[in-house]
Structures are given as C-alpha cells and as structure tokens.
Length: 75
Image (cartoon, rainbow, N blue to C red; front, side):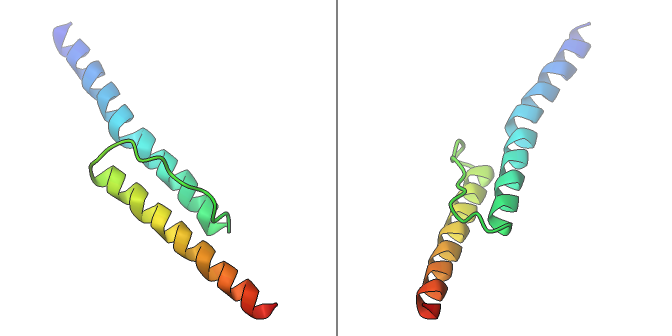
C-alpha cells in the first residue's frame, strides 16, 4: 500500500512539473507558428522549462518586430 501511494505521488509530481508545462509551451508555440506573435508564456520555474519559456517569448517578440518592419516597408 505504501509503495502504491509513493508511485501515485511521484507520478502526480512528474505530471505537474514536466508534462503540464510542456503542454502549455507546445500550445503557445503553435499559436506563434500560426502568426499570433502576441502569445506569451508565463515563466513559473527557474529551470530548463523557464529558460525555454524565455526563449519562446523572445522568439515571438523578434517575429513581431520583423513582421512590423515588413509591413512598414510594404506600406
């Protein structure tokens, strides 16, 4: 019974710390890929997941800037 409890608790921790943030990152990355350059991620952790959030936010910002420059040039 104790082993089962430990397995359930460790699985729950894994889902909350890895799987859910990766789902959120994946959803936001898809939004950026579709052209929604205002989509941003909230950095919740100061680890690799948090660093990935910063990088995706930076990428979206750079793409938005490039899109604005392109539109200004075309105008």
